[in-house]
Image (cartoon, rainbow, N blue to C red; front, side, top):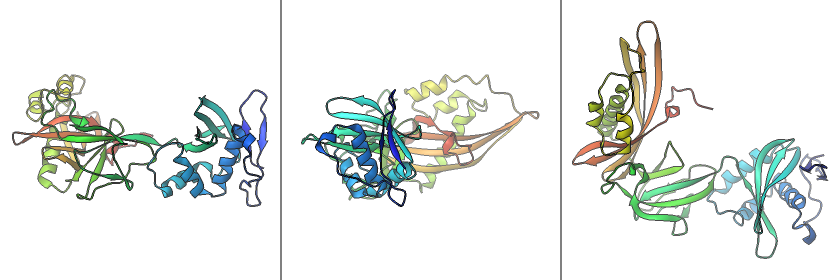
Length: 347
């Protein structure tokens, strides 16, 4: 029999009947007296999920937290968590007059949290807080109306309008940076599909956080791809003692946090080597944020040996470029080697 257990000193338990196919069977509807009883609320919610009442559970989730997850993705995540539970246990995490949060466990292993929110009629609505859900900041070219997973991002979601894109904030002068409208969306299970009636758009996630940059896909621009690879190689040569800081300065916005960091890098740790080579250079994606700004993911492998010791580095850069007086310059950079298909993924 599957059951729900509360983590307390005198471990009380609440049994949940199992149907003949091994899923929870609902005994009765939750009574008014049980509306404030967490065991009854959790039991009722778990029974509905395991019994496949997904329309009901999905619709109820909007009474708890505003999210833009499509139903198929939401149901898939529910099945992943609750599909094989055998003994559901809970432990209170937070509580105030309007909300309660409980950690849920299956045989002592944490599987998710359950958030409850009090409704206007005094009842409580429940929604799963999925371990993988994230809040995102979405940056869209200023003035462009977009939808995220089919929902228009309006004033309710907007936090800033017509401001410099955040990947250019390291520049001391952002007056020429692309302007964006910034939106906050919560509790997403995956990067949303962004679309606009004005034309096809693509999305790139910041490698250092949960910001999503929206723009036009320019990955097929061969001239720009070749330039980005050239810039990546130039930047990689400096710490490897194959190029000077002046080479990096010539392709960078020098009055920026990026250049201050890279120009201060100490490369005396890098072992002298007799042979080196770059290979597998590729630009995975280019997103044009405006007329004079792009962000791109570029990867390459770098091999070096001194005859006794050899090593290959699998590198990945996320490079922000700005066009100044007809020349593309690096305005910022993030490093993420896991985007390199030859890299061992960090688990």
